[in-house]
View: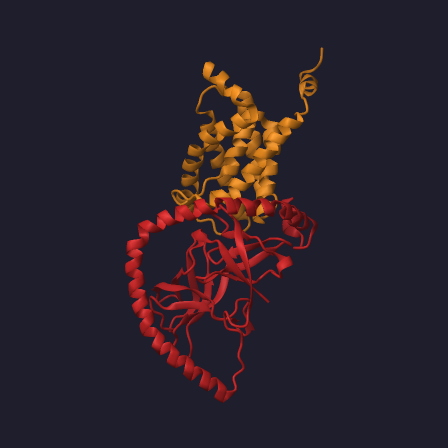
Length: 185
Length: 261
C-alpha cells in the first residue's frame, strides 16, 4: 500500500496555464490596488489593505501551498512598487497565505463568516508582525498609536472588505458556476 | 532576503533586481494612477466642499495679514538688495531662483502607518539623485531616498526618519530661530533643538535654513515648510518644542517638483 505522503504527492498536479494566468491577473490587481488605489481611501484614519485581503481570499480558495506562494509574490511586488525594504511584506504574506490556506484545508468553510474571520485574524497577525519588525528596525512603535490608529481601524476595514473581495476573487478564479452551486446548496 | 537587503549597498544585487522589476511595474502604476485620478479629484472636490466655508473665513483673515506684510516685505527686499550690493555679499541659491527642477507625478503611496513615503514616476534617467529635495506648489514635500532609472522613492517630511534644517521667520536682528524639523510616526512635525531663549510665536513661518551647522544642507534655503502651531517651553528642558503645521496636504499629493543638483 502507498504511504499517505506519497499518495498526496502523486495526487498533486501542476496548475493549468489558464489557472496560472488567472492568478497572475489577481496578483497584478492586488499590487495595483494596494499601491495606487488604497492610499486614496482613508476611513477611520487608516487605509484598507487590499493585498492582504486578496492573499487571504486566494489562500482560502486555492489552499496553503498556492496561498503561501501567492503571498510571497504579492509581498515582493508590493515592496518593489513602493521601494520598501525587500522581504518584510513577503515574509508576512507567506505566513498569512499559508495559515489561511491551512484553515481552508482543515475547517468547514460552508459558513459564510469564514472569509471575514480569516481576514480579521490575518490583519491582526500581519499588523503585529509589521509592528515587531519596526521595533527591531529601531523605529518608534508607540503602543497607543499602534492600537488606536493602526490595529483597530485596520481590523474593522479589512473585515468589512473581506466579503466583497473574497466573492470577486472566487468568481474570477472559479467562474460564475461555482457561485450558482453554492446558492443551490 | 531581508538580511541581504539591509546588509548590501544601494547598488547591490537585490537593489538592482528591485530597480529592474520596478522599471516593468512602473508603467502599470502610472496607468492606474491616471485612471484613478478623476475619481480622486471627485472625492477631493466633495470633501473640500464640506470644509469650504470655514476655510473661506480663514483665508480671508490670512489675505488681510499677507497684504499688510507685503508692503513691509517689498521695502525690506529693496533695502536688502542695496545692502548686499554695498558689502558685495555673494548670493547663494535661494529657492526657487537658480535651481533646476524636474516635474514628476506621484504614482504610488505607502499605506503602511510606519512609513510616510511616495513613489514618483521619474528617476535617475531624469537626473534625480538621492537626497534631492522635493517640493510642490505649497511647500516642502520631502527628500528622495531611493532612486531607480525610471522611478524614485520620496520620504515625506512627516516620516519618523525625516530631519530638515529649518528656521522660523520673521526673525529678529540676529536672524530667525533655527532648529531641526522632525517627523513622527503619528505624522506630526515638530521643530526641535530650538534655543529656549529664542522668541517664537504661533503663526510664524517655518522655512528651510539651507545650512546644517557649518555645512550646507541638502535642502536649498527658503523652501516654505509650514506655520508654527504651538510653542512648548518648560523650565527643565534645554530647548523649546515647536509644533509645525505643514503647508502641504500629504493626502492630496499629485504633481511634485524635484530640486536636482
